[in-house]
View 1: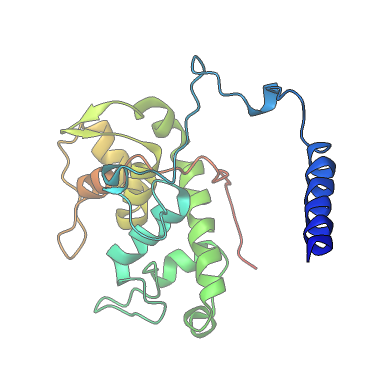
View 2: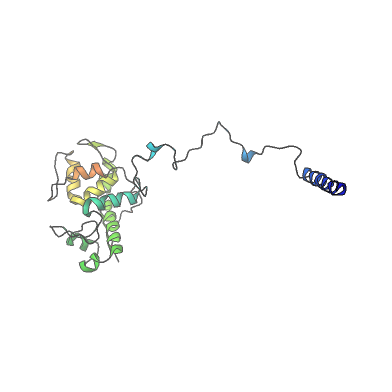
Length: 211
């Protein structure tokens, strides 16, 4: 019995001695683990403050271009690719036949059956309108007209609704010319509701053709 206790006691001492060899004699702090309280590090998300998410909708499209196009599509057709309204405007972004022809689309059946083609058409029309309104975008962006702050995205949205001519008339008359579509939606409301989105990635092009 005593031999067994001697054996286990010796084994415990041996393990303790070996383990002590792996313990550092001095713990040192390294720069890459230190946090400097004098430096600020800012993160957009995730946040522990619920108020930071108050104006966002899943999937957090925010004010980016995807948020712009999806918000505009919902306003136009509730985002439905196969929607045709009572005036004959078609698709997710409610294009008229003549507008489609200006960007090279003549097959309306193919247009209605192709979400991809509709998305291309939307970007192409934005490019065309941005080209035709580039002077107005430069001259009026940041100004307040009829109580609305003018932005590039607001101008482009209004042009999609009422055409380039309506936007120019509204701006040049300082908002006195009230331009509305057949459903009573005004250019002013589109400039207000779709202002401040990111549309700088849209390249102005005189004659974009969708292929």
